[in-house]
Image (cartoon, rainbow, N blue to C red):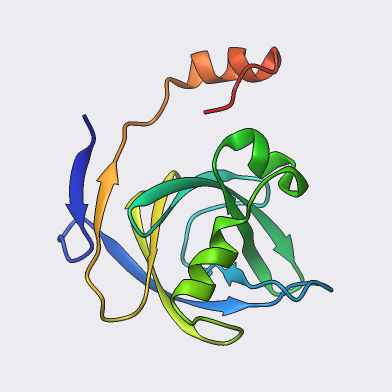
Length: 145
């Protein structure tokens, strides 16, 4: 059973981030602050509202961005196949290019939560998958996490 963790818990580090546009797309993406320890190509869990989605970090000329959040890791790898939940979240919360958001670090390098500044959020945290089993599943194309 997942643990619940509020955004104002002392173990949660919060970063100020911005909604941005990256490349030629008109869809919003999330500009990841430089202080977040992540690299181009990393996959993370991104909590939007009460649900955790899969997201891939990518680099552009200004740093790291998350271009979308998807229902599973396979969809995060091939974003044209799935619904971009980050776009939905931005629309629901009236966030657009240049607007500030709070990025909560829930599990360094693995789980993050996104929220509107000043709004408290309670996240349902899940454990990290076993790396060796995940690697085997990915080699055989079975990982859908």
